[in-house]
Image 1 (cartoon, helix red, strand yellow):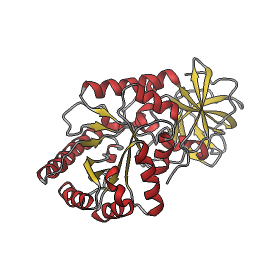
Image 2: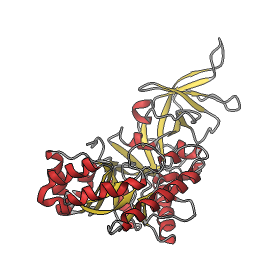
Image 3: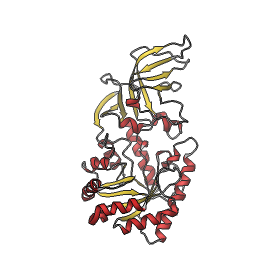
Image 4: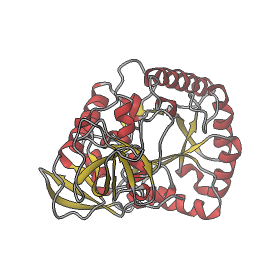
Length: 366
């Protein structure tokens, strides 16, 4: 997708439908070939049309981060949902969980005995309608218990009337150069230990859930029964620099216009400014990233600074500085942020807009 449709006003989020479909099918084929269930994390795209494509390609259900996201997709026909988050449930959230469980198979995460007890207490007689997976820390050191602590949480969940379905983890430390393979090994070990511990304690472990986009396509043994990658549908500058995708795998880009240009003089660097800032690209930049975003047609260029509506692009000496009004494609560092910053995106094929998709779960952060 090297052509920005003339009808678009910049900045605009474009999705190349052919690349999107190819990415979805590649992941689905890989999971099927390995005998694993695919439960993609839809917080990446928050979009009904893309979720439907993933389910049609063989996904067993979806993963979400919040009750609000679950409500959007359940209201639009998705019947198997996992909230991969250690929920702290109070009265209002309990009512929302009851409503979800009435129409869909619903699972949620817990990572403490207190959290499990609170969830069961708030759900009361309906506690058994919600499955729980115990979150295990496999090296990311965010949420999750150590593998040998999973039984304690599971026992508290069962005592509270909840249905314990298994364990899950997120190998988030795979989002660093050189780390995906090691993180996948950590994930496999942690999930295997936790699942074995639950089995020995008398629990039926039906689901062992893991996965991240950097690790999902790696070959090798896994204790998981399902994986939950999200970013794979689009790719982004982080995945590119982690060497987990190529330029040709990136389906989402932001159309932007050059609004300012400066040759190198008076001590200034050679640069242009485009009209896509942090309010559309997001501001995520890990310490190893070479910039805030990348330009596919100019791979040596770097976005070195973001303001709310400006992106400063340091331009390579080997390329002509673009004229004012030139339209450029920009690849965000972290595509999940971009999708939560816009109301709609444009589905594009062969340089033409073929559809407009609403980001249906945008802003549903609770």
